[in-house]
Length: 454
Ligand code: GAP
Image (cartoon, rainbow, N blue to C red):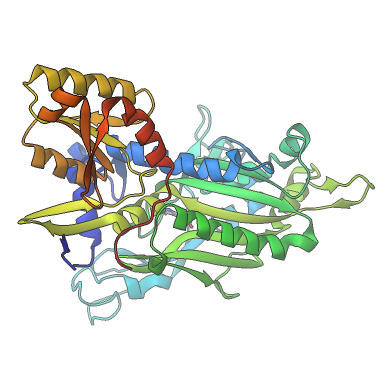
């Protein structure tokens, strides 16, 4: 097995996603809607796996974190109090010549509309306006009247829905600091320059957790969560050499943050933020206390009151999805054939196993294969494929990252065994049909790390 050593590009990932139905450009039959995507079958399955692995690590396997699902459209006062109405802005410049818009603070990453090899402002024809602040929140109206009084926003982060429920959860879930509230859901940002596939989109699914701690312990918890989150990304199989931590300096930090570090991934576009971990201090609870009149504080058993500080790990499924696909994508030559293989962690892979009757018209193979498929699909997402040559069927499964294939052949009819083929090593061995279910359950629980060299 020889790997072809081309570095993976974003275009390669986009084309695989489209070819195998992971992700499509949205509204395509109407010409699309810039940087908006729809997920097909394998994309949905992969996203479900990412979400449930996050939920498992952040809620299910812990005593100190509970779940929440708050509304997307909140009372607009929430966004006044949080600082988003006044300050959730990016500096924008227009080019009067090519009519394109750019983020003034990221001109070095953009291309001139007329001469793409140049940066905006670099050619004599470029005519850029002065930067002006552009608010990233999508506006909408609640109710029949469309005036100032009905103005509302689609949430740009899930975090505020958590802060405004602090009192409810602390009381009803019988939790005391340190404890956390976790939420997964769609967030919306009218990004000036979305792009790089799913990396920066206007509608994305955030997974955020707000961890409320006594003020004196905030620094220690910040370090703890940074380590935990980095370990979690490693546990998904992302290669060590593609992960790093970058601390924000004071100028870069958000208005609410007293410390932020990004967990960065080496995407095809370079090192970029995968997940942010921030120490938000008491900013949010204090703002909502002042603006709502409801005290969001903690009273300990001795009657001492304090406003907990907040440590926040925040990530989107989209950024993880792209990182996982880039990390997993390989082209290699096996014998005299090329294959594309997605070496996804089996827990992330959309399909866990394929069930393949070698000769589909052989009734003995067909019936046994169908029976195993019907048994396994009650427990795992598996596929039954009986069309085309066996080599093509294997390649189809390799391309979507299916870790194992169970093949029914002549020998099955003699001894009720099947071959199991391993996606990564291509090793094959025989198993009794009656043991396949237990074998697959065990295999999915085994540790996995990428066999690809770093
Ligand atoms: N509550 C804090 C917060 O929202 P953020 O750094 O703006 O902080 C957190 O966003 C995470 O959400 C990022 O680390 C990234 O994973 C993801 N994210 C932010 N904007 C995104 C976008 N336009 N498209 C995809 N993911 C995005």
